[in-house]
Image (cartoon, rainbow, N blue to C red; front, side, top):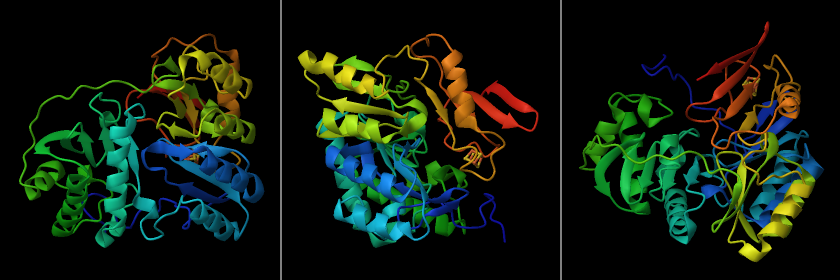
Length: 366
Ligand code: SF4
């Protein structure tokens, strides 16, 4: 029977163990809580992609990494390598470690990410969360709260599906909020994937935590743009595809980096006197820190030939459009190319959608 929210089956989000069979082979998604990635782990991912599947790593709209075109059976070798590298700490919880955090939030945000991730993996019931469930940890700037996590912290304030509540706390509160979602979902007899799909979801989950929705507006900013600042160097990854040479360049630039949900990578804490050489090294690999680059803010789904549903080779078409484009206005709305109406990987919020149809591309601001 189909539930009132339209979900009649569990989600099929891929993981690193439970891969998705795409037209070009197995697709594995590796969760990076808070987007945090060490150079050593990036090197493991780069080598695994080169040896087991498509050499380019895909960055996702949740700041995770995908390896695609895995050969039949290669997922076992991939899982073994990821486990050895510490990238697969919990086989039971791997698909639910969806945590987006403010990329420029520094150590305080990172400690919250680690504490919540540990609490999530240590709570057996939370292995039953849907793979679509998302937690956001916003340092108060308002960069990731607008991505509408199911549960989130904005500073110390609990946010439920984007709605601020009267509750404040840390990682332990987020764990309780995730459990409250599961309890409310069970009480409603629902198979909802997201908290907003539950009837009166935010208010009822807040009530389970003895809190109320406050109805206030929280500050919101846009994506972290490419550029150089005291926080470090932020580079755009063209179409979110990290080629082997680009992974090597990033791994050579820093011991640790942050993959953002906007297909950019933050190389943190680059001393200002080294910024120019870091930027030049990454630019030589095709990773630009120029906010006016026509690559900034342009993303695409897999399209043909990797996806059987695709009506076009959207990546090739996006590349051609970028090659013909002039300088981008910094802060301009993102552009997302998709090969069909499923709209995979679309950025949250206002953007230009280039949708492939049997009659060609249809462009709209959505
Ligand atoms: S949007 Fe359509 S074509 Fe693109 S990856 Fe998703 S299912 Fe495939």
